Amino acid sequence: MARPSSAVAICNLALDLLKESPITIISTPVTKTETLCARWYDIIRQATLEAYNCNFALVSANALRAGMPTVSDYTDYYQLPTNYLKLRAIIDPTIPLGQRRFEIQGRYLFYDYDEGVSIPIWYTKDETDVSLYPALFIKLFSEELAIVLGKKLTARPSIIKDIKE
Image: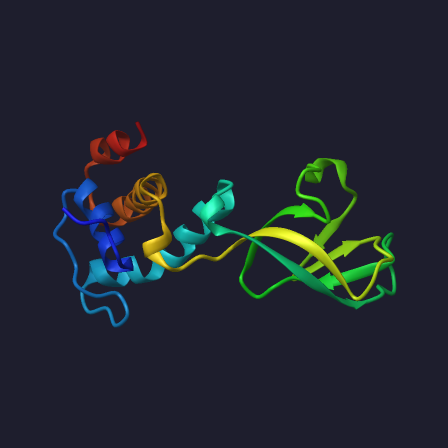
């Protein structure tokens, strides 16, 4: 069998775990199952990406300086990219974030940095291209999706228990 290459294929893996019938579309859902998959797919994908350090979704970029905060312990704040999900490093990827003093407020990174109009960051992006997902991520993502869908689609708690194990 070929690797999953679409959101529907990943939903169908989750539905396989639940012993439910496959679906054909989530962009314009018709059935209850398609509607649930459409509702939860992006949320579970983003949550799974945020929960783990997925290297296929790691990107580096220069976050542009957005200004100086009016009330803050920091001298500068920077606009995070629109596809940003989770900060992984600031300035130097070899220095753990736990050794940095920073704050995330909404879509802004607050940090003391006096070296220009941007700051180098490494972050997990909201990767939507299924063809880039490694097999382990596909497995984890489909299992996480099955757990959420299973609570709505099946009255058999043993299936959910089996997925969690």
